[in-house]
Image 1 (tube, rainbow, N blue to C red):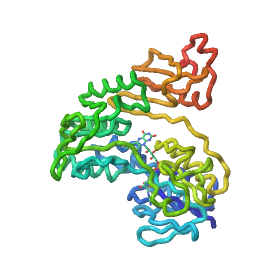
Image 2 (cartoon, rainbow, N blue to C red):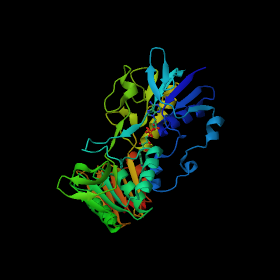
Image 3 (cartoon, rainbow, N blue to C red):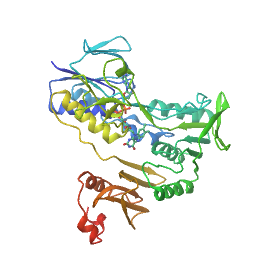
Length: 395
Ligand SMILES: Cc1cc2nc3c(=O)[nH]c(=O)nc-3n(C[C@H](O)[C@H](O)[C@H](O)COP(=O)(O)OP(=O)(O)OC[C@H]3O[C@@H](n4cnc5c(N)ncnc54)[C@H](O)[C@@H]3O)c2cc1C
């Protein structure tokens, strides 16, 4: 019987397994995850940063689902080695699993810049449930009140809001760029978000970097390049991710920023596929949930011989912070014309060649996914634009 072995129980690995099972009831599927939990919604983690986590609420499927689907899931075990000649993987307890097709869905890890004193107690990042538990323990043990968040991207802001909405914390966000969310928002949108953040009592330091983390044994603050001293009993570093590539480096498959795959999510080895935050397609590692899901699906189909190519999806981000929704999708770079609408707090569409190429919605984000679809379909709005018709009313 054919065997597909999947390394990693994130959304890419899980979607691959689910997709395979939908098309084929025979193939033997194993997922190996080094986490002690069943696949869960990583994107909800920031919400629980200082709150009780009921794992059932985070799990994508109940434990019984894996039995019903006949998917063998091995938790708390890491794959240490891939042997592509014998088509086997070796786990950290010495167990060996064979495969006909292997899907590497090992995801990413948080990149922590080598700031001086970054190893002090009280410096964390958020990637998994284990990190959340560590942070919660530290908050309790040290009665933390002052928090410094390094990185004003989506995850840094989410972590700030997760803390702010769950306790009386004095929070500072430090961002080296001159504004918040530079990849998701334009300047005006960034300023609106920053005001919302400030209005909620969170201090933002922009255009300033970290010189060093200070403390003795235990963190006490962050010294910025400008000389400003930010007091912090807890520091959360949120400065981007890197792909987990260690397994791929041991075998002869090309690796760049991620494991290089073709449109079938196949590496240069006919029997090895990769998907999600560990995979690089067309020079890109997106590091976002919808891409990992879609790539997992494509890897799963092709691993059982159903030839389907990955179609790049338009990236989108939704942030729910300070009681406000912020949505951004597509290309919001300069060079396109813009249409602003008096809708929500801020609504801006970016237009290229009479089609919408990007959008930012703050406040009222109801049209977000319809806009994303219009971008994907490259819908032509030349008539509506020339007749000054409100595009939001017709999509
Ligand atoms: C706090 C947080 C919030 C986020 N919010 C959003 C959001 O709002 N929107 C969005 O689009 N994206 C968001 N993301 C990013 C999104 O979660 C990821 O893009 C997505 O989870 C990637 O899925 P994946 O399956 O590729 O990898 P992962 O989710 O990283 O899963 C990989 C799994 O493989 C395991 N693994 C690695 N190596 C091995 C090994 N050798 N053996 C066994 N197991 C191994 C890892 O421990 C992990 O469990 C967020 C991420 C975080 C951390």
